Amino acid sequence: MGMLPRELADLLESGGEPSYRGRQLFAALHARGAADYTGITVLPEGVRGRLAAEAAPPALTLAARRVDPLDGTVKYLFRLADGETVETVLMRYRFGYTACVSSQVGCRMGCRFCASTIGGLTRNLLAGEMTAQIAYLNRDLADPAHAGDTSWFPAPPRAGDEEEGEPETDAAGRPARFDRVGRLVVMGMGEPMENLDAVVRFLRVVHEPSGAGIGWRHMTVSTSGLVPEMDRLAEMELPITLAVSLHAPNDELRDGLVPVNRRHPLGELLAACRRYVERTGRRLTFEYILIDGVNDMPEHARELGRLLRGLPCHVNLIPMNPVAERRLYPSPPEAQTRFRGLLRGAGIPCTVRRQLGASIDAACGQLRRHVQAQGATAPGAVTEVEAVTEVEAATQVQE
Ligand code: SAH
Image 1 (tube, rainbow, N blue to C red):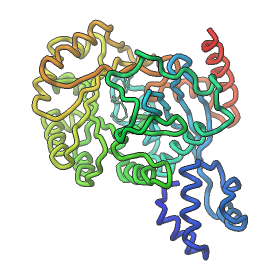
Image 2 (cartoon, helix red, strand yellow; image 1 turned 45 degrees about the vertical axis):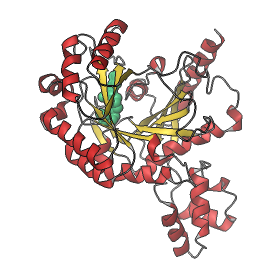
Image 3 (cartoon, rainbow, N blue to C red; image 1 turned 135 degrees about the vertical axis):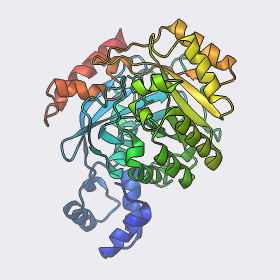
Image 4 (spheres, rainbow, N blue to C red; image 1 turned 120 degrees about the horizontal axis):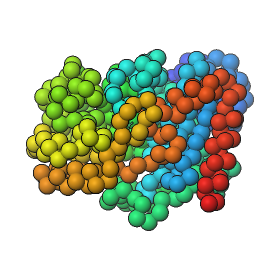
C-alpha cells in the first residue's frame, strides 16, 4: 500500500509478470480501494494467489465507526496488523469530502489540550498504513450498499452551515464529487514531522492520478513546530499547504500549551515559516485553538497580529474541542468573534473553523481513548460499539 505504481510494476516484473500488472494492482488498491486480493478480478487468478501468499494484504480493519448525525462527520477507528489502533475522520463540506489522517500511533509532543498525546507515542505509521486510511474511506464512499443510507453518511451540509467563503467547486471549477475523498489534512493522531519520510511517501502515493488522485493543493500537513523538519519539507518544494499549530502569541504561554516550544521558541519557528514561504511560494496556515480564559483575550489577539504581520498566511481559529481529561474549555462565541475581529483589524486574514463531529469524539485521540476505556480494542468487540452508534445516529436523524 505504500508503493508507487512504478515500484509495483518492478515488483511484479521481478516475479515474472508483465509490468502493467503492477499498474493494474495499484489502481485496484488505491482507486477502487480493494479490500483484499481476491476481489481484484482484473488480475489473473494465479497472480492473485501469489500476491495473497507472498504479500501482506492492506492491513487495516474497522474497529469502530461513528457518524455525527448533525453534520455527517464520520470517525473511524482502524485496527492495524499489530493490534494498534488509529483514528481517521471524514468531513463533509459543500466542496466534497476531506479526510483527516493519522501519522503515528499516539504522540509524544505532550500538548496540554490534546487527547492523542495522553498515552505517549507507540510507533510511527508506515506510509502504507496512511494510504490504507484513504483507500478505506474511498471504498466506503463508493460502496453502493451505502447509497442513500442516512445512518451511514447523513446530513448533507445545509445552506448557511458552510465554512465562510467555502467554495462549491474545486480550484479548476469542477463541481464537488461525493463518491471519493477530494482533500486530506494530516491532522489526526501524531506529529507528521516526526515521521516525515513516510508522510511524504504517503502524499506521493495518494497524489497518483491512477490511484486516489488527490491534488497537491488539496493536501495540508500540520505541525506543532519541529523546525528542522519544516526546513526539510520546504526543500522538497511540494505545492502542499503547511499548517502550524501556534495556539499562543508569546513564548511564555506557548511553552505551557505546546511543550516543543521550549526546544524551538517562536522566534525560531516564525523564521522557519518565513523560509517555508520563500522556498515554496505557498501561503501558510496557522491553527489557533481558542481556549476559554487562556489564550483568547484581546491582548492575545493584538499580540498575535503583531507576531504575524507581513507573513503571507491565514489563521484558522478553532473553538477547542473539550477533552474529558483536560480541564480546558472552548471560548464562548462572543470571545471567538471578538478575537477574529481584532485579528482582522490587524490585517491578518482569519476565519473561525466550523466545529464538526463534536458529538462523536472527533477531536484528536478521543474515540481511541473511549474505546480503550471500554476495553473494546480486542478483536470482535467492533460490532458492539458500531451497533450502538448506528442506532443512535439513525434515531437522531429521524428526530
Ligand atoms: N501534531 C500535529 C498534527 C496533529 S494535531 C500538530 O500539532 O499540528 C492537529 C491539530 O489539532 C493541531 O492544531 C492540534 O493542536 C489540534 N488539537 C489538538 N487537540 C485539540 C482539541 N482538543 N481541540 C481542538 N484542536 C485540537
